[in-house]
Amino acid sequence: MLIIPFLNFRIMDKIRKDIISAIFLALLSISVIFLSFQMSVWQRSYPGEGLFPLIFGVLLLCLSISLFIINIKKVNLIKEIEDQKPNVKRMKQGRLFKYLATILFYVICFDILGYVLTTGLVFLTILIFIERRNYFISFLVTLITVFFSFFLFNSCLNVPLPLGIIKYLWE
Image (tube, rainbow, N blue to C red; front, side):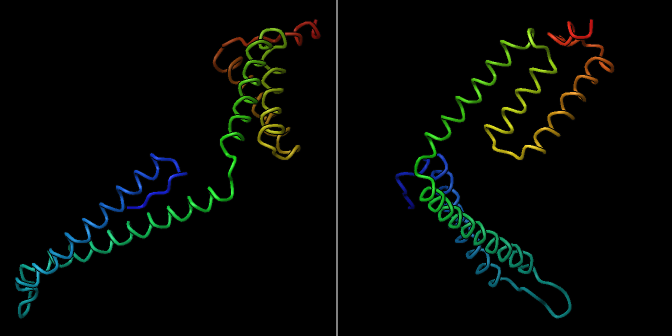
């Protein structure tokens, strides 16, 4: 049984169950293979009754071995990730508070600044300051998304979005 105390319990529990399942399936497939050899696998010109259990036993053995290897690799990968990022929980909480502050800004300023300005500022804040993306790509994605969604809601769906201070600039 693989126990790594500093890892997420749910992930390790699933991996442990997968490893146990792989071992059980491997033992089952080995018994099917041995039992298929007790029947005739091949007769003179056609397959015997033991051929298909043999094929399925070998196939099940290969799949159970691959399941075992994949889960062992997962354990090693999780160990490496945990060794590289000792303070992940605090970093994720910091990003969470940044996202919450951005959403709070969006809720407060939506009617005042309007859909276009508020959504643009929120997109830029998320892409540039929280996700640390390229400035040019962030501006491009923001412009395309904001104007496409504004056009979609106003023209195609006939859902009016608040213009905010833009409405006063056009008058």
